[in-house]
Length: 115
Image 1 (cartoon, rainbow, N blue to C red):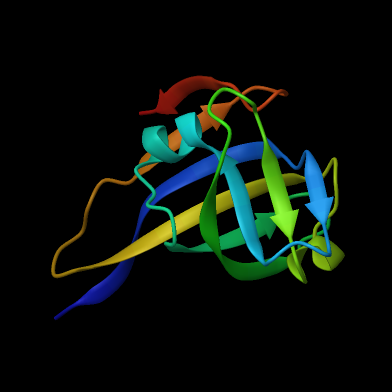
Image 2: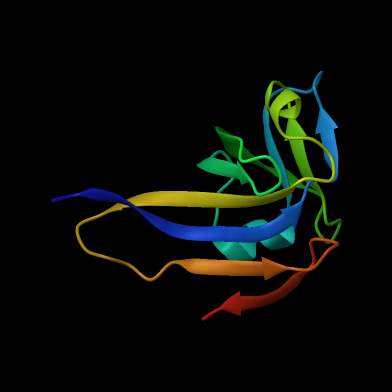
């Protein structure tokens, strides 16, 4: 039986931008997209550790090495600059998988994988 399971997440990232007038999605530093194994256009669940808010959106590339985590469009009204968030991607699988967890520092630079 196919189930939707967590395949990757970026943990404790800091939102650096919130642009209501921007076409919707979450902008993520391209280095972090690659580390997590996300795809541009992939649906993700975003959870604010600051407020508890949750929303679904899709991944867009931000400049490599920039540390940008940007909430765009309507999402920018829900999750604001400075909030700590978790970004989670899911996939369909017939069996359990080991998810990739990316830990970042306060500037959203890659620190390590959680093992």
